[in-house]
Amino acid sequence: MNRRATMSLVLSGTLLVCAGMARAQQGPPPGGEMVHGGAGGGWTGPAIGERIELLGFEGMHGGKVVTGAPFSAVGVSVSSQTLSDGNQITRKTQTNLFRDSQGRVRREVNFSAIGTVAEAGQARSFVVIHDPVAGVGYSLEPDQKVAHKMTFAGKRAPRPDGESRFESRIQKELANGTLKKEDLGSQTINGVVATGTRYTHTIPAGQIGNEKAISVVSEQWYSADLQMVVKSTRTDPRSGTTTYTVSNIQRSEPAASLFAVPSDYTVTEGGGHGGHAHGGARQAPSAEPQ
Image (cartoon, rainbow, N blue to C red; front, side):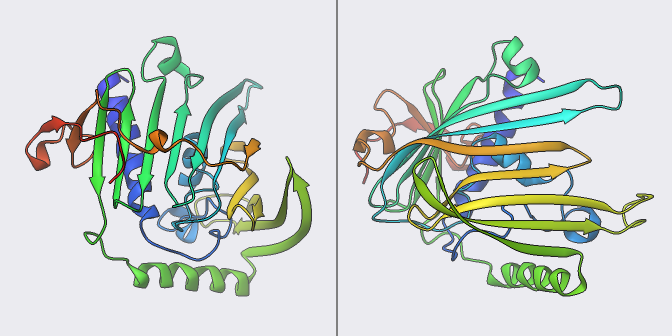
């Protein structure tokens, strides 16, 4: 995959996540990676959430703007898959996470360990900024000094009907036994108290051509203080195991400059496709948030 195709895929995905974060929701999503719209009775597989975790968004993609709880931390995602011949594929992504008191979020994602992308020296990192105060999101390419901008304040209405259908599906699967939820209690993880929940989703035999039932097990540990997931594990026999852990948690206010586009960047409007939807590129505004 060439550099342009790789970055188009990555930037499109990250800007969609930014758009999703603009819609206020309550609490963490059940299971994190449980996204409707795929095979197996409405569950994706391998799940979209696994890819979101690998790009550093696990724990902070529930859509809720959190104020008054600033922090900085490091999130590490590791995906491991064992093939039928015993060969093993392991991918690791590290993300530097920042959130200020006003709910602005910055993620510095390094995915240089992902296969040929790293070997070819391509697209080793990117930065995503979500600013709910200004109603904008940016996906930055540091090596190109380009920022792709998305504006969502007042432009994108929530879709409660879709969310309601998703919640109804969850309740239905809990009722019929294909989804099981377990309370794991509380424990301290890297200095913060978190509450654990385990979700086991069962795909019945024959539903997706499977001879036997398939069980997908997800565990997440949610910090009510930070209002985010600080640890999660997802095991799917089709795709392996993905773990996500947040460490080096600092509760101080990050520097304001982290949530602004540097003055020497070029800003393109309308996402990661060259900015043509809004008349092409323009020079970046002041580095200070609006």
